[in-house]
Image (tube, rainbow, N blue to C red; front, side, top):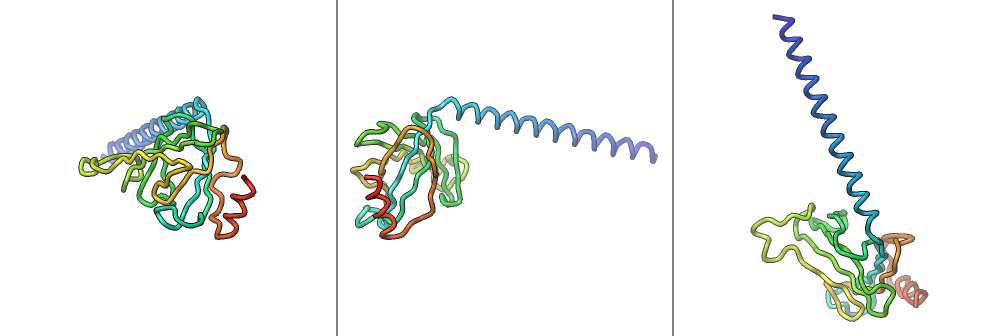
Length: 169
């Protein structure tokens, strides 16, 4: 009887180790695939101006930049700054021009880029940011080819923002 219990425990432990190793291998494969997908796309650096009000009135309160792609297909992303939302397909087009555009799909109230049946009326939101229009309190300052040298700088206040904007012009 004792022998059969030990065999059962041993078998259970071996089964657990087998399942765990398969899961680890699958996760490593998924990460390698995501890295390969990212390396296949050209990168761009988007710089956004954040305003205090959603109509972009007044001076910007912060400058944010982030590395994105130059075409749709960027994988799902969630950061603490996004709250309960997530984004995918972040990309810039019309790079290095006077009228660049930044696009993204925002999944409202979901951190993994999924849409529940009851969210389909408002999620995902396909947003386009330009230099001439305000999108939820943001305007694009620019999009350049290549990754950002210093992504997502700390939030700046008042005259620091104006100084940085003036230095880049």
